Structure formats: structure tokens, C-alpha cells
Amino acid sequence: MTLSKQISSFVEQMPEKSQEILLELVKTMVSSDDILTDEDLADIETARKEYANGKTVPYSAVNWN
Image (cartoon, rainbow, N blue to C red; front, side):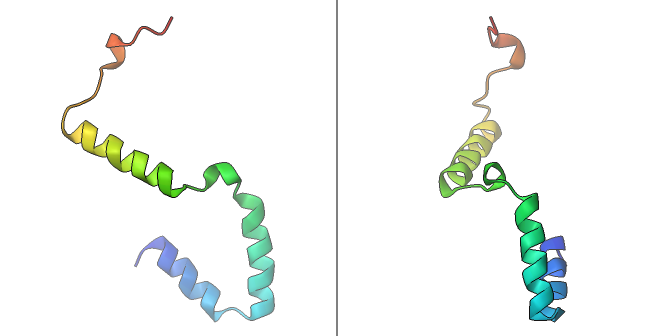
């Protein structure tokens, strides 16, 4: 069982009042920068495909100046 499913299982067993408190706690732990948008997920998938197909540039080839 994945960690997310384990957490969900525990949360489902909690009383609703405890779930409300937990929700507020979790909100403080997640910033908007941590949430992946559909566009982010699509970009990640594209990057993975490009990497798998060897369409990457070596670090040493980049001019960082």
C-alpha cells in the first residue's frame, strides 16, 4: 500500500472534527509552489520522454556566463 493510501485510510477512520483540524495543519505545510498544475505535469512528462530519447544537453555544454 502506498503512503498516500495509508494516510487516506487513517484519515477516513478519524472523527470529522479531527479531520478538520488535520486539514488546517496540512494547509500550513503546503505552499502554492508545491502544487503541480496540469501544465507542470505535462512539462515533466515531456522532459522524461526527451531524456529517455537522449534529447538532452550535457551540463558541460551549457555556457553559464
